[in-house]
Amino acid sequence: MIPLAERLLSRTSTATAPWHVIESTDHRYRNLEIGEILLRELRRRLDQAPAAASAPSQPPAACVAVPDGVLARTDLSASLSRDDYTKELAKRQRRLRKLVRRARGKAVTSVLVFEGWDAAGKGGAIRRLTGALDAIDYDVVPIAAPSEEEGAHHYLWRFWRRLPRAGRLLIFDRSWYGRVLVERVEGYAAEESWRRAYSEIRDFEEQLAEHGIPIVKFWLHIDPATQLERFRARESTPYKKYKITEDDYRNRGRWTDYCVAIEEMIARTSTASAPWHVIPANDKKFARVEILKAVCATLDRARRPGRTRSRRGRPGRGPGLR
Image 1 (cartoon, rainbow, N blue to C red):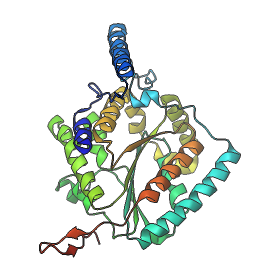
Image 2: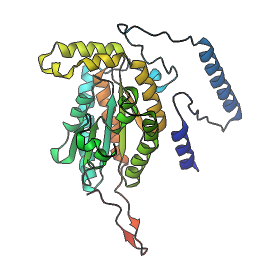
Image 3: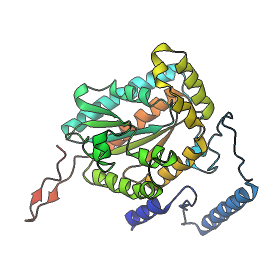
Image 4: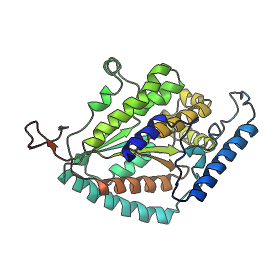
């Protein structure tokens, strides 16, 4: 019953019509919690003024489009001192190295997905992961616009074909979630296509999980002021200038639209087997350590892919990804 309920919630909870899971063992607590949610939503709607169109020169708002959403609730003040960061980083990297070697011995393939705002620190976080590993144990796949060949297939095709042999760690620097983020917001995909993508993505991730592949998904969250500060720092650094384009500044004008898309993406695709981790990334040191913690916790729970029953009723190997 619980798996069916989780599937129902993941497939029907949206940013504009979210489900609220309420502990109901104590009827007094249950009733009070429901009343507080109703009161909060009524007050929010009554206090909500019509949104005025902002001029392009104005800085974007910090995700006020969904005031009770996961992004608005993320504590962006979280930080680590330099000394604490150095100690924690070394500790978590040692742990990661051991767990990845164990996964290789158990033929456990793992998939990490990195999404986030431009300049949120995805590349640096990935380097802190791979810096602890042997090159034989991982692959990093940076995702850009699809090639002509990739565009001629279903959008998930290019991700399916990247799945590695058993025992390796696969890291996607951006991913299939582009369909419900940039393609949705920028109009590259029809509404029918990106709405259908939620169920397609859940099915894709469920198939990986059923094969015993742990999936860890990260959204690196920063505020508009931090993003602008990092943009300007890149412009003043010769070897980082290539990272900045006119599109980066143009996309800031769609900040609210992206907030709505991110909230719905998380609400509709965060499942028990493939949860989203929203990482406060205004402080890069804090974000890197939190990511390492989450990856280690997931790999620590990972088990060798199970056996299936053959047609004759005898144990057989599961579907191969070798």
